[in-house]
Image (tube, rainbow, N blue to C red; front, top):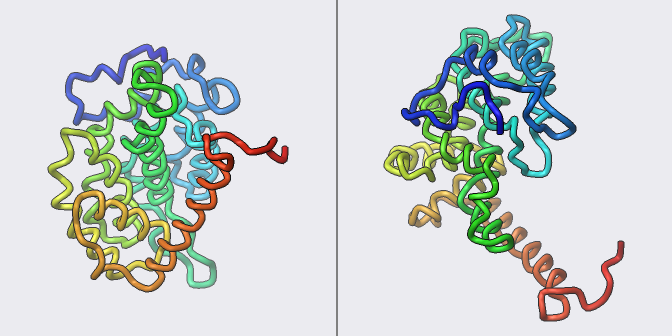
Length: 268
């Protein structure tokens, strides 16, 4: 990764650079994205804080699409993640369209969209993904994957922007912030925050029917050593059983000949 300034070497890992410093101080054209390099990212990122909600929505999709593909952390992912975190409290994002005309359907909040992307990216660099990569590619994987290592190192800075939104007035924002906080708190400097997150977990499980969020929260609670049996409903149990069947089918297909290979050539 080549930056004009090294954000990954920040001696204060809890502090985020100002969003404009990130925009101006990053050599975007030198950073790999999904389909090339990031020379178009500064303009798209700047439009995310446009006063017009339609422009914000389109710019958010355009910018994040450049660094989102197949659970990969690209060179440009780290400065984009820092920029997204740095604008979470920007007036244009903070106000957003929490109200809407009764004659038109509500728009999806830019703030929620940004938090969900930070969450997905944090899960792509979490301890489970790292363990899988090390199992297949060797213990030196993180030394070679500088992008994942950089993102993991900067989780405290990203968390510092997500944390205040845990008490946001809007339920969708609170839930999105909480789900984003879960993988971020795997960082050694943040594990103490898990005790605080347990209260949020119990509240979400008592109020939300969102399958994705419930799965994330239940997995986290179990990983943290909590008994979730009293918090699970019938849909949770059915989903768990369905996932178990799919995993068993996948494992059986992957190791069909008992040696980890194929018993015959795959059908492609």
